[in-house]
Image (tube, rainbow, N blue to C red):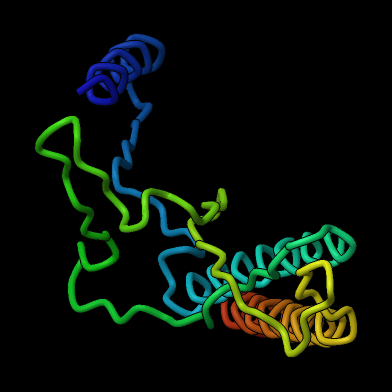
Length: 173
């Protein structure tokens, strides 16, 4: 409503300025890269890989902490959407103050990106109870980094294809 009243003010101002001036108002939403499913999936994948690198780095940082059990994220999946509101999630609602939502009372840390790290014991446990194996964590970190680099490359190639498609015919890139 505010945009329409502003457009009306601009129209009155433009009409008073010059009788032949025409004002066009375009009120439709613009399309962003997030509206393209490929780019939305790549953005989700990059966020997942970034969060996974953070979790694995925490494991490496706690490799000398007695009793520490390493965490990892569940594998990334692309949620299929069947309609405009299919991206939303369904959450449980607390109907009384004594209810605990989320299963075990929130014992697992929740990341800012919405991914929940789960405890994933490595192959060995030391005498102090620490289960972090640095070699396995480094392999996970290398895998996450290579996947991140591949996703960035795919994102850049997709952007260059879109730029190629929207350029005027006969003009150089």
